[in-house]
Length: 298
Image 1 (cartoon, rainbow, N blue to C red):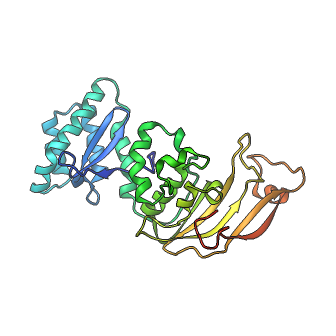
Image 2 (tube, rainbow, N blue to C red):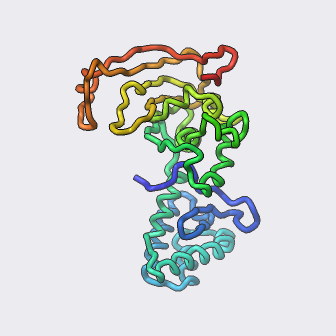
Image 3 (cartoon, rainbow, N blue to C red):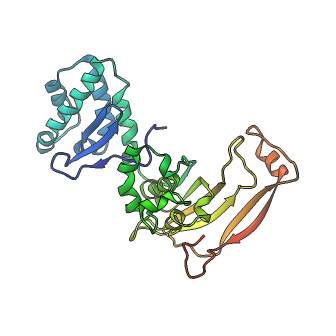
């Protein structure tokens, strides 16, 4: 289990100053990690060496020499990585001296896990549901390129979300997770706000069901509509569960199951699946766009 941001994954810098460095933004600043330490089997060793050296107060030059040797960096790799390694180590050493340790080396290990763990046949999760206007300003700014990359910007542009239909971070997380963590032909199952299937504006971009303009198509395999069920106690939201397959286009109609309670039936978080099934009924329906000429319509 890793504690990391599944949307803002570390990316290689593109300007002269950050070229060849992966950037990690934290509450205490930006850490730059040389690309060379990500060769197979190196990164775990690098983080362990980093943590051990910071705790021991090893001088920065000695740390760089150790890193080059223990990671088996070539002469060219070592020369290119020496400066960034020294900068990163001195950042962490200064934090340690100030009592702001916080196990930063482990934070790096967690944040870079998405780059090192590979892709999978199944991805399952419950992403946060947070509207665009409720995200911190800084987070909105740094995620803007991702909304554009995956074709999730509404037809009227980012400013159009200030109306009744708004982008939700769950939309972006779904597309990033499919792109970065899912094998072609693999399936993603997410608990999602049902509004992604119903709203105009931002929802239309999501319902393109494609990763950007030239990326993989996404097939809607099945949707469970739990709006009437209201499964989250004390929360008024529109809950759905969607299954998407990477690499196939969506064909309509799609299977769409609506869940409803029987009479005044009640259940809690402690209820078993058997108890929930006994207290509910399902309507096995099919869904398709309201406008047959527009596959992105609600």
